Image (cartoon, rainbow over all chains, first blue to last red; front, top):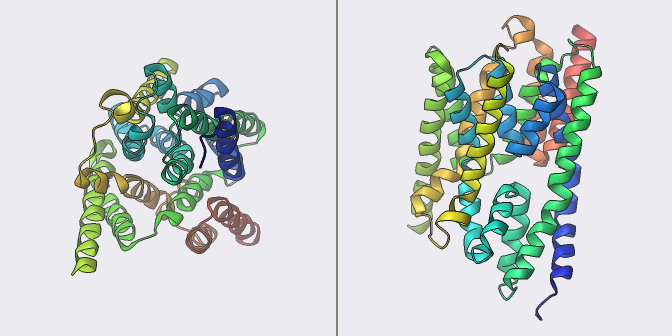
Length: 237
Length: 109
């Protein structure tokens, strides 16, 4: 494979990211509608999507805020949802780590599920790409993902403000979470983690300040990792 | 929700800073270092460890019915999960769950 131009790499990234429009646009709108219905104004809703730029964590924070949870619990729970991105950061570091400091800052801001997913595959398949081409591919991949995310959030917030309350929208939050969770249940370890999370969150619901959820999440992570370890050992044996 | 406007903005900004630092961690500060296997293994399960526990009480004790589960919401839960599991498609799962809820509320609401 010859060195590809940065321009070509940018458009390769753009094409790789484009199919996510089908998910990003409706999900951004769902977040905008839900957050508006929960009582946030358009600036606050946009603040979430522009500054946090992570749908599931934003939705978790909004849900906990409607339950009037303490600030520290909201931060810890929503950031726990985003901890997976440390794994993305570690996976991208060998490929993008030699880019200039400020470029890495921008890439970190735009490091979302989709840009990580397509970039990891591309950099794996084309190890001879230059750092400039890799950077261009990465920014290409976020163009059809992150900017539509802001726009869709805004459209959802405007739409949500025009809805009368009491449309059964109360159940939009659990439906959206269920729809995010179900496709994640790929392995026995994921299923075990999810079941642990549910059982312990319900069992520890008596704890104050929504602390039960954090404890449940910690145990569920450990159970997921432990089951994965067991399965790997069984395969090896 | 009973937070003041400055309180809401501090939560949003702190979440933004925290999310950025998580994303910047290896890319920015300790680039080149590799995560140990056990850490990778734990991080893989963070979303699936947090979100189900957050969702379960919302499904079992829906706020709109005063906390008692009802038919339409249960049906919507099951349809969303089954469609999500079989199609692996978030959007298809949301739409079929919302459709089930709308039909259920129209028939039995």
